[in-house]
Structure formats: C-alpha cells, structure tokens
Image (cartoon, rainbow, N blue to C red; front, side, top):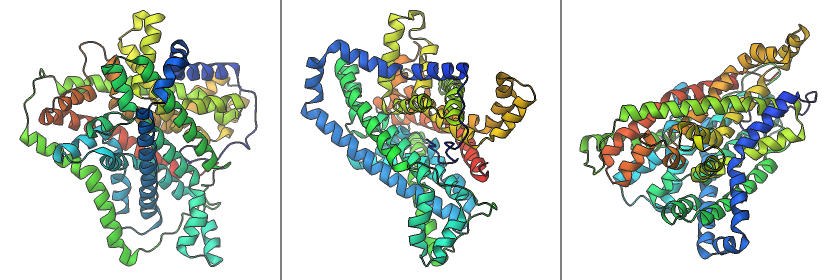
Length: 522
C-alpha cells in the first residue's frame, strides 16, 4: 500500500524469498507494535463476554459510535476537498506566489490540534461541540491530504490529460475522469491517515466538550477506574479501524496511477484569469483560520496573562524533555520501519503485507490503551522498566510507527533496485549493501519518517500523562495542566513552545515531499 501515493506498486518486481534475518526483524517489529492489541484481547478474555456485553450494547455506546462516525466522515471529506483544491491551485494553475503557498499550506501540520482547539475556545467559549470539532480537526488535518496529493499531481502523466482534452472533454471533466484517477492512491492514503488519527484524538475533543470513544475511554479508566469498560470501548475502535482499512484497500485499487511522463515533461498550468483573486482569497482565509487565529489567541493570552494555583514550572526544561523523548522515539520507530518496508516492497510476500496492514490499526487506538498495555506487561514481566523513560519512548514508537513506515516505504518504492544488485555483483554481502547503498539512498525518506513521528510524539498527551516518569513534565502535559486549571495565560507559553518545536520537523517533511515529488519513478 503506497499511502503517500508517490511510487509505483512493485507487484511486477522480481519476487525473491526474503532473507531470514529480514523476515525475523519484521516479525519482531510487528509483534512489538501489536502489544496494545494483544492487551485488549487478553483483557477481554479475562473479563468475559458477560461483563463486556452490557458496556458494548448500552445506549451511550451507540451515541459514541454515532459521534465518532459522523465526525470522522465529515472531517475526512472536508480534508479531501480542501487538500485536492489547494493542491490543484498550487500544482496545476498559474497561481500568484505559488512557492509561498506550497510552503505556507503545510504550516498547520506543525500546529497541534489541541492547541488549535484551545485557541478557538479560549477566545470564544461558545465554540465547542460537534461543529467546533469539525472545524478544528479539518484545519489541523488537511495537510495530511494536501501533501501527498500535491506530490502525486506533480508526477502525474500530463499526456493522459492531453488525450482527454483532445477527445473533447472540458477541463472539469478531464480532471474528474483522468487526473482524479491518477491521484487516487495519494488521496485515499491521506484520507486514511486523517480517519485513523481522528479515531484516536483525545485532547481536542476534551477541550471542545465533544464526547467520543477516546474521551469516554479516558473517563472510564481515569475517573471511574473501570479498565474493562475502557478496553471494551477500545475494541469498538479497533473494529472501526478495520472497516476504514478495508474501505481504503477497496478505494485504492490495484495499481498506483500517478506516474511521470516518459519524457519528464511537467504538467501544464491552467490560467486562472479572473478566478485568481477568489483563489487567493480562499487560501488566505484557510491559513487565517488555521494559523492566524491560534497565533492571535497566543498573543492575546501572553498580553492578558492569568494566575494559576499550580506550582510554576520551566518551559525550557519541559521543552528539553519533550525533544529528548520525541527524538528518541522517532529514531526507534524509523529504524524499525526499515525491515518492514524492505520486506513489503522488495519481496511482496503475503506475510509481509499482512504484517504491514496490521500496524495501521495502532493509530486508531487511544494513547491511553497503549499506555495501559505497556503498564500491564512491564508490571508482570519487566518491572524494572515500569514508569521509566524507556516505557514512554517505547509507547511513542508503537503509536507512531505507521507514520514512519509510510515515509520509509515510499522511499523504498522510489529507490532503484539496480544499485543494490550492482553492489551484490561486486561481492558485497547483504549487510554491506544495506549500510553502504540502501540506507544512503533512503536517507531523505528516513528523515521524513523521523519528522512525522517527532511531530506526533511531541504533542502526544494521554499516554504521556500516564507514563511520564515521576517529576518530569513535557510541553503537552504542562499545557494540559494549565488549561485544565483554566489558566489560559499560563498555558500560552507551552502552546507557543509546542509550535516552535514542531517547526523544524515540519519544514523537513515539506522538503521531502518536494524532493520525492520532483523525482521520476525508475
């Protein structure tokens, strides 16, 4: 599955039995990522159906299901529409200041969703509930669709559109019947990410007062101390994730259609003419809502200030802790993604594909479930790791491993096999080829995977609240503590620090999409 839609499927590649070491490493990684799922199954088996069924079939569960489904559907559709429209403007038109817009449209990715929600509701307390959640999550998530779709449009074959226009199709019909087909893998892949992230989001919905499975799971466990009920609701999220993955596989189709032209000719650009002003106004409004409002709220609360009953803490120290935890987890997750990506792309065996697909269920689980699973296993089998930095870093690596896999697999799909075969013919062993040829080629994808995981880990909240070592505070938990105390002025420095920490990896991610979109498949 090419989530980013940036490279061809390699089903036509020569299938070879994978090395035992590669297969073993991929199985070990998939097993580690599956720990939360194993915990849910184990908990359900211990509790029994008699205790789970009243939780699953009560009226509240139906309400939570309806809230989660309608929110996921609305936000995913809106992100798809905004992402495709913005990508078409920047990649297929003579939009003024195009280079500025290609960078600016990615910036909301560095704005944590719960910071965005805090910004809106702190300025207008009436901004809450379903529609508030739809607006906030759409503004924070549309870059996940925009980035891969823009990259796919850049490498799509323009000759197919020329043929469609030559056969009498107008620009709109040609886009609908040809261009949309070419970018479908990227569009579906980006929408998949949005959907799975929505299922697991907690902080934004808690701030905006919208009840979903994640908020109820947190309440059941942390307030009601009812772990079985929390696990039962988490099983529903797993089922929803399976439904989304099945729908994604069906919508994606069998082959990736976004391919560069044989002569490397870039696609033509439509002349906006009188539509240039409305297009600029629309993009400016989008960025104003996604970036302008949060920055205005942060500036307001910096000036206004507020008191808090909580003891003062050091934002700088908490930022150092955040960067350390997130960077370590990003390195671990990115390294772990390499064997799985190589197994899936280079060998295409059924076991590898099943392993890869199973890891995409993890983003649908709340951080609370991941944290509880690690607490359970460390308490029973590795007590020396209980409530340590290792436990928190491992939780981050599990939760955001699929993001690293997305980037690394896209890089492997783009990497030419010929260089590896030449190195093997010169007498280099598999390990030497991996270190001297494969990994250097994958360096941009590894950096992108690192950036994706770092961005997500630095803003993770629920797992951090449970697993953070005693006496340690991160930017996310510090921000949460102050907003829970309604000390918006005291929370503002933490929100700004979160944005600043995310700027560099966000820029690196944008540069990677620029680079991989500019390359041609081999």
